[in-house]
Image (cartoon, rainbow, N blue to C red):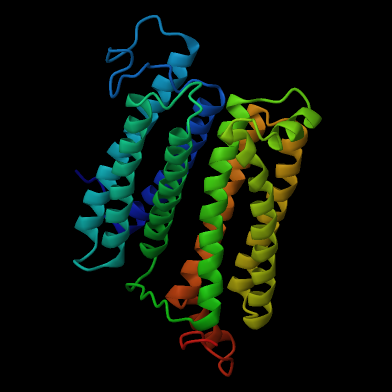
Length: 327
């Protein structure tokens, strides 16, 4: 199944798929935040044993809509993979990235099935649910990454060559990506704790966080702000260092966006705590998290693919090129 005859139309479609996936991710967060994950019972792929639920409750409608939107993701991914194999030659990086996207999409569906069939939804507060939620978040990050790379690499006239031998700067960027994955996983657990054990006041929330008898999901919440602060300082620090080392326009733009969006996220995180994590703020918080992840990926791909090096040769011929390992 393919519907594209040109790389240009394929590229636009990929960006559309990326946007749609982010919307599905946000809707999934809404399902969790409203406690609607059990809206279809312990049935998958059916909803309460039916293909289309009859006289559904609000929670059922929310969950069923999420399943339909997730099913459309699978269809879009089939089109994406088929079109990529038609338009790009064997061995092309776009084929590799789109295969990765397809695999992560399948895993995403399987994780959803695990959550439903094992009743790790609704008011379930087990550590097993927390672990699956973390895996879910990590897989979602990898899915978004593979789609973004597909979009970027399909824009190149010649196949991009990825080189991870970038010395110390490459290691710093790799640590930043790993930090974002850890931060996202901790955020998934924190959001789950906020949903299952909402606080009536800020003081009560802090008391719960440090109560040794409280549920593990509550006691784990305290780690997320600390991780966020550490990753934030690291992100902004690395961005400023890269800006000074490679003063080229594309780097300036990438690092500025990354630092600005992360600073915004820190502010939103504080507001989220003060407001006791309302649903709308949880969704906004997750949206900005995805934007930060995309900004980090954009910077990393530009660095490891040598795009910055190409600009350095054209703009500053005598400047050190990052096409060689950097100390």
